[in-house]
Length: 589
Image (cartoon, rainbow, N blue to C red; front, side, top):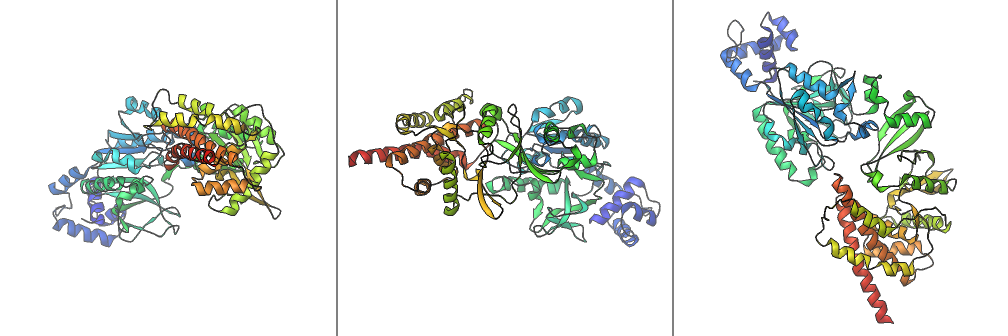
């Protein structure tokens, strides 16, 4: 049966037949479609001459009736900043009712009690639903590094006659039914530039060119058995390819340029996907969750009202923090919220002391607020700024000139960044878990053996950035002149300034030729062999330092891919390079 006949048969089944005109109104199809469908349904044996469902129709309804539901609730909900630092998105409340509870109740209304919830971020917050509603929680351990395609993979054996539902949906009317006759995917009549599908005349969902706009994708889907089998197989295939680690599960619905399921179009006012703080404020301006701690800090720091905080946009998740951009009183700001485990890694009082030392030096970003207790920070947004491109040598030379000028100020603070001490400290945070690297102990011993050379050749200790990586050099233009600001001073402290040169190299994933070229850009007057070898030592030591840091973050569920592997390689490779250089020096003497 086609979609039209299915709709009309379902309307007859649920409401009984009165006349064709009423049937047209109830089914949403034209009178001509109704008349043609009735004839064909009779011919196919689904309705009798009195236009009542036959046993064949009843059996069809039984076979395709919804049996279960899967709610996807594993993700960070990154666009929900700043609320997502305090609560998972499925537990956002509209009219004092958590979104996920409303979904569960609507499912119960149509007798669906077999409900699986895939959780990850703040998974413990959902535990009460097991007792409250009899749901089953399925944990996605990879929620931080992979998208919801991998969540659906965990429950692919339950896709038959199932609803798949995102947890951040608010539906005014119940979108679920006791009976379904075909697979569908829900979109709204709203045009959305982020959507890559549109509904054609045949109610098919066809792909559209990127950024050309399509029907807003709501994300609720229903799958009958034959389509569920196809989707399950497709999910297995996609998950074998790391290219799809960041993919949405909807990728499994596509066959070339269209989805294999029919469009289910709803009015945009009836179903709302709550992705952002402002969307929640729009649908429920009295929600207690709008009074999140971060928003209250902004109001106090900038002497603003909540409604004056607009255009909240998540920035790329950093390795240490979550940050978001917002506008207040016509001016743009960035707020930093410390990430997972940061309280173990960063001394916020020391960071505040660094910013005090930098005050009015025009070296860093302009601070509007910083809290030395919890690390919340508000900075003025630098319009039109761009980060350093480590592959562009002109950029690199300018950054090294700026870095050298900062070092030459010889600023002082009362704390030191101890590379080897921090290395050991990060290792203690593993809490007895052995390193993931088989030869870690040998690598560590080799790196520690470089310490005497470093101590013998270390220069005067001054305030050093420590995290002087390309992304932290911002090129800004003011009054027609280009300048460079250094941002993110969380690790800064007293240290040999040449550590910053090493840090730039390892974050840029430079090879030795690029390392030597960077050293030449910093030391325009020329660099002695002893200093160059010392920087190689720092590369080895800092490589192991950040490798240990990555191992700690990995235990928290935060994965850094190639970066962590390359840091460990720096520890091994540059220990070897130092030995070769020292041997060469000995032979020359």
